[in-house]
Image (tube, rainbow, N blue to C red; front, side):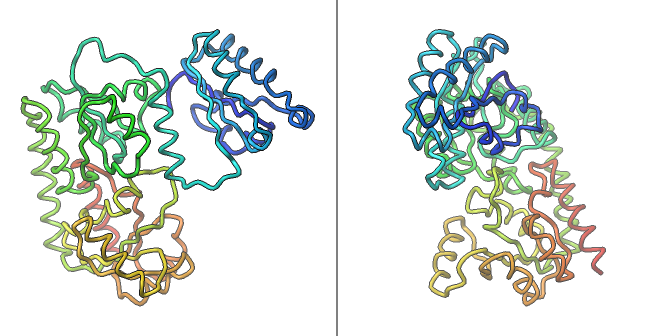
Length: 387
């Protein structure tokens, strides 16, 4: 994440190894209090933390500091937030202390929501001085081309682009998020903490489809048009016509092709891969005329089938599905379906390709209208090489 911030890992030095601190543009902004066994045993942890925070402020002058408690300091009951609050008041640098409860099990979704809510709550900025209303994208797929398309569609309207969250957002964007007049979110249920904050501070929150494919991208733009009295940029019509032709041409050649689409295979911080039950890509493929069967990673117990049927119904889908218990079984699941192409999580590459079925990966699908051409070409090449 771009921005002048610091992260202090409060605990033993080896705790820093929980982070990819040796790579990435933020790598230099991670610090450790390097607590010794003696300090932890005696409870003398506040001095090192205070000194660490004071040195960071003195040498780097960051805009914000996040302090993470690790397993050892949680075990001894270290109330390190008192030090963080005191140093923050003395230095006037916004700081937040997080008791990460390293020994307590939490879901990745809960942790990410906690992270995003924390970022949005750090020294929230005042509304933009120019008073221009704006729209923020939350939990939407993010790539440079798609973001450029969205911003181009906004040109000529009274709506400013306030950022794409979480990917693509700077620290300052997070500070401004609570002041956004409009928030387009992919799945409100995945962000309970953050939604609670924004409902108190931001303007209108609107749930929108993930913009994969022609139909879902236009659904997002239709919602966008209701947020302004100005017409959206005429370039949108050009993009729509081009995307519609690509979809039509693909259907003419490949309609009815049997496709397996895996869901519940992702365990990552890519919210667009798991939002809406992991079903965000389905309409991308069905609008292309592909005969889609879902492969659901989960319990194959017959009593669970109504659960999966209900999940699909909640998203307006009626599709055949097969269930497999884990990665080791995905190959057999693919082989018995007589599929002509499969879309799975990339970490199942070997299990899927061993079947001889052409394989694509969910993260290769590009969002928004500008992504339709890429998606169609990629699918066409995979299908053509299999003949």
